[in-house]
Image (cartoon, rainbow, N blue to C red; front, side, top):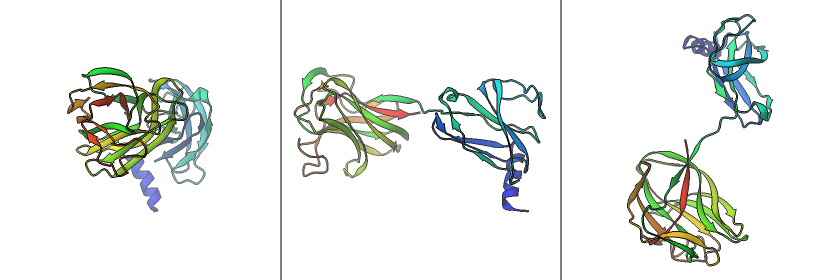
Length: 282
């Protein structure tokens, strides 16, 4: 009796086979099916979330977790190990469809998965709610951002700064420890178009609940870009139960990638509060 045989048997006894789908859609997507009857044949089904029965075959009248169910393919477990991996190239028209696999020996169903399921992003607006609105200022100092405490653990896919940046100017987000100012992560650089817009810096990062951070947006055109800001807001505010103690911050210089230079301490409580967002992944 092999460990693999025991694993697949125990998986089946725990509630049936399992399906894991990875990859981007359209394009190659991997289907890993585990906990099958060794040597069985499977049927890959697709549809929308719901409940329909199979109209025919060895598992006719089995109720699935799909509506408008259709058969995509059947595949045998040639090596009789109770596991099957497939890697088809999925066309764009199939993206967003729900899939499910059935073991055609036991008629047990896997969990459902969505092809090309994407994370939902929610904007966490770090901009203070009060303070006067000032338009048409250049940043003057190269880095501007916010210090805060993460009240809960959450993931981001990047952040954005609303700014009018010339075509040779860029925005790039960084995350630092606070108050140590050790660089933790740095995002992509996004160049401007000469119009006021949200310039996004992509960065996959996890903020850990209870930790303090400095999030800054650097521009290489601190004296030639223009942005809208809040002036003299009330700092120490909270946002959406995710962050608290939010306070504005600026570097003391215009020429380098602060806060790594000689002016690393910067200015905490800067009354120039930029319009900046974090893109939270849910």
